[in-house]
Image 1 (spheres, rainbow, N blue to C red):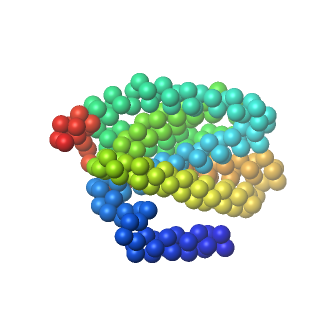
Image 2: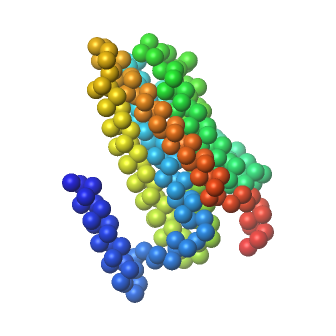
Image 3: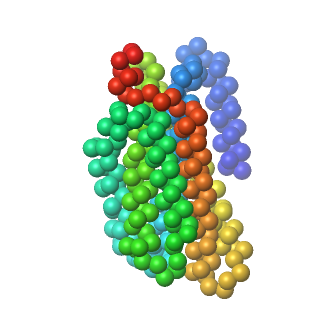
Length: 242
């Protein structure tokens, strides 16, 4: 029911905006070449990252039996690595190799990290061996992919449209994370419910592993779409062409 109401309200919103002379959302912005590609990338990026952190937290707490505080502390390397990568590395790599390549590499790293967790997260696992390598790889991948996706989403917009474009990609990011997390939760719950083992912990873990697997597939889809939809333009070339 909530999804139906949301879809109905969205249709009503689109209808009203199409009739307004000065709409809140000008549909002409969707003619910007990279806007669609950038928004799709952000939808998929958040659609991978949010389930990743959600199920990794559950794995730490419900399978490895860490306390909520300890689980939070053990996730700290993720924002630290992302901040360092975004500040010191991503921009330079984009200037050298272009948006497409770095976006693809970021998605591939995210996909690989999820596959690692889907294969190597036993119920008697350890943080250093089973969690930290995948956490660092995923954090590095997201840090690489986020700036190219965001850049693609705003490139070509007029200065007076920058606020609108920013609102659009922030909204699509939230939509992507919400829908993807809901789907992954359903997958995990279904796998856990159909498990043939009698151990509740193993049942939970099997569901988590399937959620990681399908999140990885979403990331690889993002890499393919980046290859197909994003122009391979380096930032320096893009600035010189304006």
